[in-house]
Amino acid sequence: MEHNTEYIKLNDDYLRKLQLEMLTLLIEVDRLCREHNIQYFLSYGTLIGAVRHKGFIPWDDDIDIEMCREDYEKFCSICENELDTSKFFLQNQQTDKNYNWVYGKLKLQNTSFIRSGQEHLKQKDGIFIDIFPLDNISSNRFRQKVSLKACKICRRLLWASVGRKMVRNKFSRAAYTALSCIPKKVVTSIFDVFAKSDKKTPYLAAHNYFSGYIFKREWFSEAVTVEFEGHRFYAPIGYHEILSSIYGDYMQLPPVKQRYGHTYVSYIRFLDGLELKVIR
Image 1: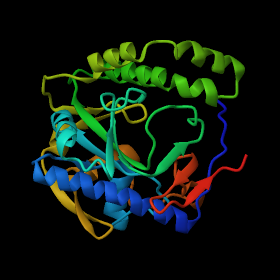
Image 2: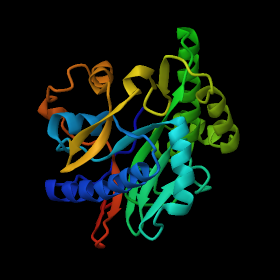
Image 3: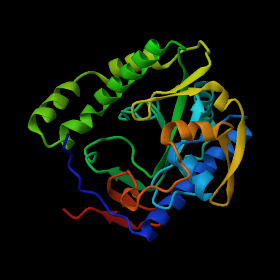
């Protein structure tokens, strides 16, 4: 599928500036979680960065963390009263009626970060980090596949409002336009049916990340601290098994041609007011 690809190509200085502003968000999450006994974990590229580089992967342009669903819901509740809203904003389906995704973002007030192809969205803007919930999932492999597939379809339906503007193929664009008419509440309700379960099994699911991942619960049974940009943050005790299952030999640097971020953005405004934008 061909997408429009106009986006800002950050030089090293601007990328570092973005990383440090995202770091302030991670520090705030860590503060709240420590104060209220909420467990979070660095995840995906952020976890690789901590293990391999003791900080950001040099070319990385986002931060990902995960929480088990119970902790995720508790964190969202705590933020209602204890988050410094002059500096931060917790974005989810409840706090932003125009927000389409089914996981949370902590955003930096008085900043801007608009993804290429999402300029038309009305959701609250800002430099952010992603907060992904981890859910219980059946031990049955067939049910696991159904759950992951259903949630992936729901996420694609929620993305339709972007696809109808972003894709170049007129037939795909027409299809996304039609799909975008499905009420968001219907799609998120279906997602919740497949993603959320109170029944604990030996497995946890990341329904929000790409095609979804299945992890052994024991890998998240305890937390260890790891160094990241001069701070100590939490990682799952089974981080080696987690990263190996996703990336293989994660300690090996990828080829030079693959060393780039994956967030395509058309406009950024930093805390100090500096603006970067695509020149069309």
